Image (cartoon, rainbow over all chains, first blue to last red; front, side, top):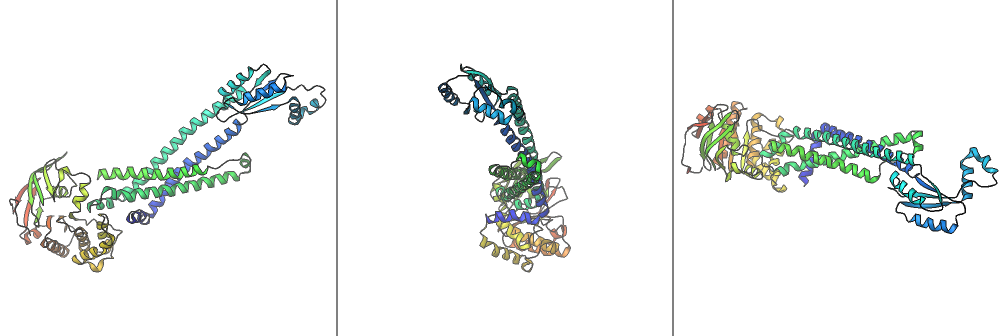
Length: 289
Length: 228
């Protein structure tokens, strides 16, 4: 075991430039993946913020008895899609209108009769804020006799749906492409290390080293390089994140960094690529000599 | 120890060995001579499991080369000592480390390594240069380190592929003398060489190859040659 670590570490000592180069290469490859991840995470975050504004509003007929509304609210709350139902009375609607629609403040001030109807505002749960589910909820609401009209910004939600699908598809494709490029680059880097030490491997075999013995230090070396490259990539990503957050404009839109879980996943990905790259390169080399 | 029975080795360009049969007894010394491309290296490579026969049977130290599993190759090589014209030392390790390396890869106990290394370094006359790197040593000294490395696992057979090919006359004499001493200690030696002067100096058995065939064998025996 000690020998394994000594051999793996001595590879760094013996070829410091090549080691630094391969760590940097792994680092930058993973940095590209990480940056893309950052963009994807923030895009999703932004979509999520917009999504939270999806709600269905049911306008009620005048004179609907409060008990009926309370009963219906309970029913609606039990819909699988529904997160929360809020009752907005006629008075509250007027108060809101006065506050939010500043331009019409005067018009609303002198009214003798409140023209605004009472309503039920229905927020949907995560995962149900798409066109299909929203329309289904709206349709069910129309079934209540005391519901006059149901609004939910149909076109807007359909657009949001499309945006979400495109984002997911693009995210998956580009993410996979970046990851594939990273795997190839890292594989090549490790292959160079193996070729650089081909003579040493040949000598090891000559004196009776088993393939497992030869492989060990390379795998450990690959994993260490993957780990260091992964940490470098996280550092670079965080630096970029700070730089962007420093821009005043973007600060207000509140960009977020990767979650701890995602950071750990990124580093583990680096270690795995390092390991896989070494396994393939050394394996192929051992088969060929 | 080593037995070739009707061995053929074919390459796309042509045959490297054609119906070669040879037996090397325990403790025997055999010169393998012939021009470049005569098949000497092919035979040596088969002996240490780097090549397999296309047909026929090669047996070395109890292993059938044609049927070696990947796990058998290291086991076979641990019973052999192998030296080359180009020494094959690791340049970034001292003489001592180069030899210790051969013990480390075979999983020797740590505390047994240093005494063994010193023993073989003394045997090859390089105890004083244990800390030297290969580039600080002369060709003859580098070959001695390689021989020490080959000896450290107490092989029963020493396979030498042109071990004096890169050495001047004086170094050649020294290295050859060392190989003779090793043989006198009971280790069988198969030495490929171009150096006919060296061959003529001794009465050792000489096997000459030409175009993949044994054309001369000074000591054909029935396999019961006496040891040592």
